Length: 350
Image (cartoon, rainbow, N blue to C red; front, side):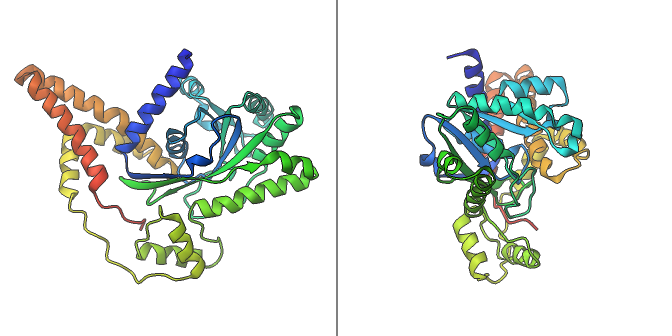
């Protein structure tokens, strides 16, 4: 096992553990649809910025490569760290037309990844959105799949749609659903149709699956009223099939009173015990301009600052009152956060 592989698997394990402290429940289904070997392109919806690839890859048995928006790579140190974890930039119009030419090099790297029987994560909606629906897909992911097949005719690539759904984005703790769809044979689509038709067929098949793998409210004049009815009924969005059935049948429950979170006092104890990480987050949070990045930044700050601060306080306790009490304090602080995460009440968004 190479050093890079050990680094990747170590970070993946860290993510899997730390996300359990951040999400009340992570529901995963469809993992049996993932081939153990061979080239795969995972096409994922994108409601919650960098939290999406973190939740999906931590629950994925394969080592994955990612295409993410290029502006995340602006700082050299961040660029190196992301590259070490198989993240690659994809450039959009908003990054400047002159930057779009860089995508040719990125696509070539993607072709090689698929040729080497590895996997690739792509967000085919072309951007993130907290709206509870699947937007029209861009053709960029089809260009990668069919470009690889054109360059390597004997290559076989399956496309697996992945739906990720949050009970309430940007709210701690939130329940999360990750649903892997059924594999789509891109080779037969490519070989049996002209290029334009093949692109449309693949986009349609992925889109249709995504609309079943996550909660999809059609984007029309009824969108806001349907969303309000679902929120008022405190629907469990991570029960995707049930939520979509309610939408399809237009059968909404009566508004319900939000359940009381009896563990709220525990939250304030955690807050008091973590006052400096909390103040750090409040300062950083003020500068976040896109709501989709709130959860990402909150997770990033908390997952690093909370353990560090608890360890620092434990060191101070050990200095004055001994190591035994310091260990008890540190373990109790961690367990208190875990208990609140797993047993507190979660509601739909307001």
